[in-house]
Length: 88
Image (tube, rainbow, N blue to C red; front, side):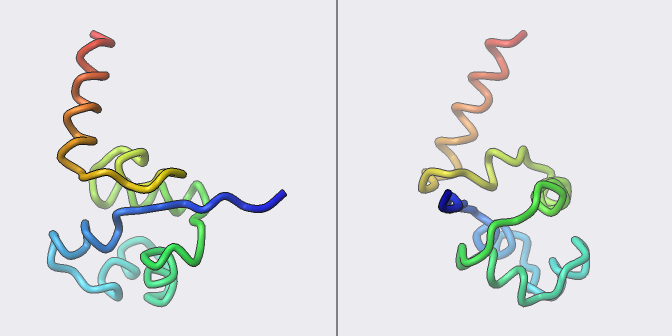
């Protein structure tokens, strides 16, 4: 079976935080080149790595990674909040 492509928002989130690939890599415990591979979607993260990235950015994994091309983050946040409100 062919691996699925995993889309992500790492470059955008990193840019918003004003951190380099090396700084992010140091925090999540990988080589800075791995961050580049992830940003270019040339490498799919392990579940553990995805969770470390999610923890660092303090966002749900589903707002950072998806198997479908990413929509604008503002739209994703509105939908996420709406779903969370329905659970209450």
